[in-house]
Structures are given as structure tokens and as C-alpha cells.
Image (spheres, rainbow, N blue to C red):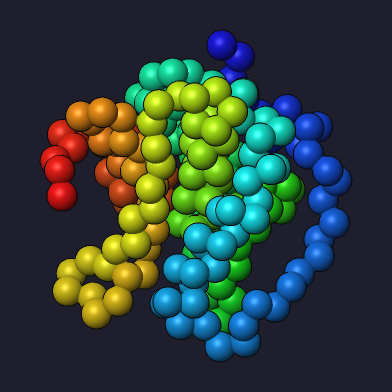
Length: 171
């Protein structure tokens, strides 16, 4: 399979308009979590236009493709507490940078579309986490679950490298 590039995706998407909408002036963690979940559903149709470029019925292959794409084409740039954003895939790719929210939105968008459009039989989930005893989550990544395996997909620098396969355990 040919390696997916931003130009391949951008050719399929409506032109970038650089429009911004302030959702809420003061944002707190619950607001950011809500915005990510809302954006995931609002932007779903955009991902349907190009998710086939990442297609596989194997969750591990999809995770590897998304991880590599994010690492190669979306530079990590952490946003300040005052300027937390979500973005259409067009905005993420046009700018060429984002933080964990943008990696998670992009990855979950493609995964959701593959499942909707091609019945790939795996699901993507957002994980909102805090480390080292943090009182609130400050990081988000995506997990792909396929029957008895779960793959943590986190291209954020310092996350440990390639997608991580773990045994999925029932809750």
C-alpha cells in the first residue's frame, strides 16, 4: 500500500477556510472532554471522504498506519491552557501541527469511519487520563478494541513509541 500523505487527504476534503469559533471563553477539563466528543461526531462526514486510505480489517495495521501518519505529518505542539482547540481534519493537516487532542480526533475519526463505512469490526475509544496522581485528566489518546485485543494508539512524544497491544479485559 502507498504511504498516505496530507496532500492525498486534502485533495478529497473541502478547502481550508481558517474559520474559528469560540465555544467557551473559560474552559475546564469537562468542557474540553465534551468538545472532543462533540467534534468527533460533528466531523465524522469529513473522515468518510478519506478513511479508505487507511483501510484494513486488521486493527493492528490501522493503528500502525495512523500512528506513522501522525508522527510523520502532524508535528506535536502543545496548546496553552487558555487556547484549547479541536479541528476539522482539514485544519489539522493544513496547519501541520496539533497536540494530543488533534492526534486523538484524527485517529478516532478515521477508525470510526472505517467501522461505519467498511464494517471493520473494531471500535475506537477515547481515553482521558492524568498521570502521577493528577487530580484531573490532561491527556487523551485512542484505543482500538478488536475482540480480545486492545491497542493503545498515542503518537504524542514520550508516549513510548509504536502502538501498544494489550490483552483486553472485560470491565
